[in-house]
Image (cartoon, rainbow, N blue to C red):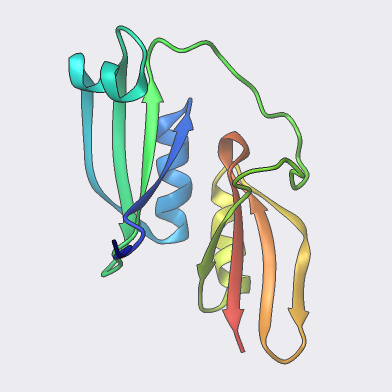
Length: 144
């Protein structure tokens, strides 16, 4: 057995339009969106009567996608912390970018916030963390 590549990362979200806007502003493109329901999705998630909208986004010419999953019949949840989480498990996405200052400026049109500040790590990178909508944490890394 050989792993070939990472295909996508899934994120369960509540406000699909807001999250799509955030990732579009970051530079990803929408490659598909559809409403799903039925036995196959019920079986894969191990629940009954799932209705969802799934939107796939990726970097232009990239291979790995982000799958945004909006359940239409889920209980509301909240992620109120504005700071970086210390929870065990997945914590953030990292994107290699150019012109970190401009990207951060562009993201001001979304509901995201920069955490801390843009820092320079040795002579290697400029880095920062962004808290996007719905508690999605993103690391931006500009190679120097």
